Image (cartoon, rainbow, N blue to C red; front, side, top):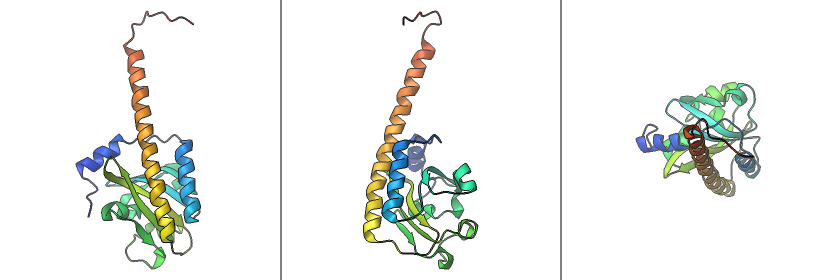
Length: 183
């Protein structure tokens, strides 16, 4: 079972661009997850020891769409990370494995999550959520795995872009104040 506090895992999470700004490519990918899973809700969840952060999502409502965080101990995504494998729940209200806080508060009934691998570490989950009990097919899970790989690639692109912009800003900050620019 994976340790949520493993230093390599935490370093990988720290390397991810965790900006709250929307990213059209991540949004398109997570919409693809919802489409292949036929669910109203899908998330890219980054799981730390105490909280999980939703980097991209479709279908969240209420306070979750504003805060984009929940306690990890209440999450289903923690089981994807800890188990290092897909985690499936067909009826959360009747499943003793899952915390009931989100079931009661948001009506979550079905869940399918696949690992989000980044820099060799499982940093979270790409998941599909339904408000009614249901099964997920192997084909849906395999499609979600494929999309998870593209999501990881996009997170890496965002990280590299952030580093590039940071480097440019450092160059601007280091320029002499009397440097004249020409139009």
